[in-house]
Length: 162
Image 1: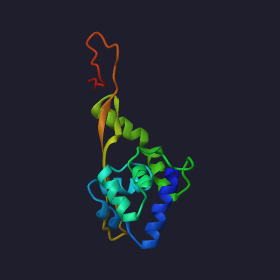
Image 2: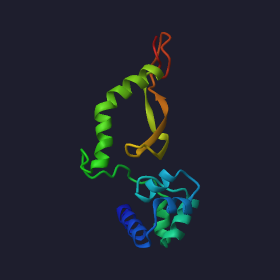
Image 3: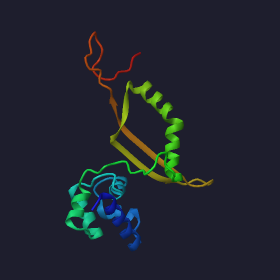
């Protein structure tokens, strides 16, 4: 079985049972609800305890349970640029604001990147009389670039020059 097959199986069971992601997240627990959904979608791994809970919930085999605990091959968007309108809007945000985010982050933190590995994310519905809004909070650790072979007082890691 390929990981994509397991994802389809989980989605089929979710659909058959009429479950919501919120229900699945509450039943598995122990980590971020977003990570649980990402793991079910094949983009993250579940810790062993959560993989066991997911296996019990979905009625999975031992091999499928172990697969939920394996580091996946991430990045499942089948086409770039993405054609799904919702996913495309995130792509569009990066195209329009990516250079701005880069400039502002590096001006404040120095030469480096924001981690998508040491990362937290929350999402909530924000009521609005003109139509509810999606509120997302992304928080990634700043990872400075290393200046190897540094001499003459140059710091070893990405730094902010005054």
